[in-house]
Image (cartoon, rainbow, N blue to C red; front, side):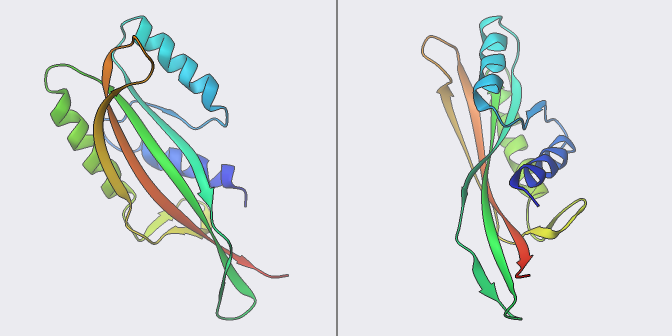
Length: 151
């Protein structure tokens, strides 16, 4: 299975979380960010979430000996407009996303991919680009273990 397939299933799971806005899981971060910047510049309220694979670890041998794993590291990043009640909303969404990906996390249609480790989550305020409004930024990092077999 490809990492893109795993990312698509993570996006599907993220879309099912209450309160999540637009989810970007294309494989062209520049295009996604351009759309987000256009929305920010037009003054629209932002509730946008991005999924990126940020790393992959070496394979680990498991028992029986012909099995091994590949660990895919993913970053889920949400951007939320600031306003009345937005801090509480950002905190609530951080909790909901964290809980949605808590282990043992199964991904629909991918029996050989599982979230075994507890994700990490953080919240900050920042600007996506100079001159743009400050937004809430929610980051959730998680690892998906893909079980493989040696042919």
